[in-house]
Image (cartoon, rainbow, N blue to C red; front, side):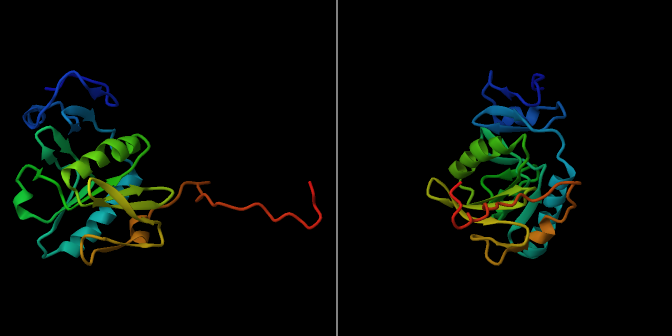
Length: 211
């Protein structure tokens, strides 16, 4: 069992491997990045789960009967002997990668629904790992204000190809024919007083006003 640690801390005293990871039975969810164990955040909120469910429905319908298969977290994606992650959703297009216990190797698509507690981790460490591992396409989804960033692997790093909001349709640049209407994905009520920020320019200065 992994030694008890605060859920927001990292385990830096050991260099863990896939075999270590598979032996842990503490009931918590972990990710390994370069051999370091990172405790996953507490259970996701309702918006996060609503977005994941909506995306899973769209991906499942699109890929039904095709060789590509979508999977929803929690599912282990083993990128190397010292790198194991649990993206919110993945699409795998190589049947040989689908094992009974996990996904072996880089998926064709990884989707991360961001939260304040995980955004820096997802944007820095996991995006670097995805690029190094050869994940061709990544979606970063911000629940509110509604935003989807679509990244495509370009050499050793990612290139941002689209920034989309609630009224847009996401068309995958690497998975042919995959289109997702984001109004379906962001279909949840706002909290009282919650408003979408709007950038406004100051009113034009009146003629002759030197103040």
